[in-house]
Image 1 (cartoon, helix red, strand yellow):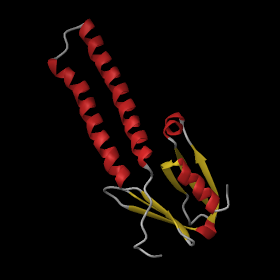
Image 2 (image 1 turned 60 degrees about the vertical axis):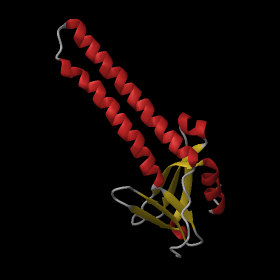
Image 3 (image 1 turned 90 degrees about the vertical axis):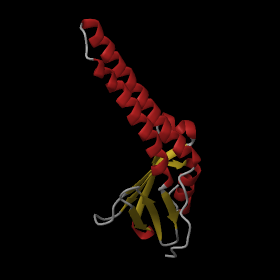
Length: 154
């Protein structure tokens, strides 16, 4: 395989979906923690540091928002005549190489947020126990359908 071949990105909407997930999770945690602090305030005299809990949730949300962009930038895939390759990971880089001869099935699925932004989760299922199944979350739907078509599994 030629290492100079360029990996395909997930698609621009993948980042939007990932950041929406972070925003929804952050908002939910803020609602719960602020509600908890307000509840404790109504039943007694809480320490002032208790308000640091919602602030910590907001800070974790901000870091997660940034991390979603960093993680998104490190995903790439390519389908060659010999294999399907996926590279991912920020701190620990992972490379999944699935020989086309071992691919048995390709499935796609998408939740409401994924469908709204036109992305899917692509799962490449393999034959045998030595070759690992590979899942690519938030791949552009047109790429997922193209992979299925090129593998003759659509």
